[in-house]
Image (cartoon, rainbow, N blue to C red):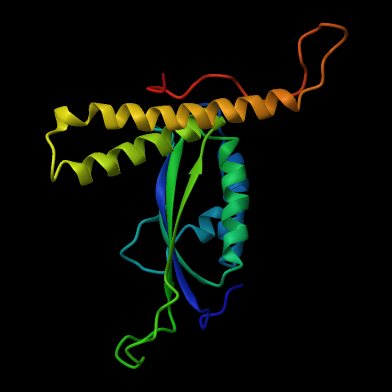
Length: 209
C-alpha cells in the first residue's frame, strides 16, 4: 500500500464507454491495478478518491459509462498499474477513449525551493480501445482539436481543411504501417491459403482517407 509520504499525488481522469455485455466483475478485475494499488480489497472499497470533492471511480450501468476522477498517493511504480489497467480496459471498451494522468510532486514546495529548482510534475495521456483503429481514431480527433484551436487564433476555420487532410494522411500512414506489420507476423494456412493469426479488424479510423 502506498505510503502517505509518497512522492506523488496521482490524479486519473477520463471516461470510457464499455460494451453492453460487460459485467461488474469484469470491470472490477480490469480496474484491480488501481484499487489494489490504493490498498483496497475491492473496487467498491477503492473507488473513493483521496479528495472528498472528487467523485472517484464511478460506473453508470445504464449509460455503460466508466468515469474516473480519482486521486491516489504513490510513486513511479504506479505507471505499471496504469499499463495493466489499460490492458484490461481494452478488452471491455466499446470504442476508443483517452485517460489523463497527472503526477503532482507532493514534496515540492515552490516557496521553500530555490529559483532554479524544478518540480517532478508529469502528465501522461493514455489511450484504450477495442482495436488499434479505435485508439488511433481518438488520437487523431484530439490532435485535430488541438491544432484547430491553436490555428483559429490566426486563420478562419474554413481555411484549415487542408491542415486536417494532412493530419489524416499521417494517421493513415501509421495505420497502414501497423496493418502491414501485423500481416507480416501472420502464418499462412496451407499453400496459397489465407493468413492465420490474430491482428484485430482491418477497419480504418474514420476520416482517414
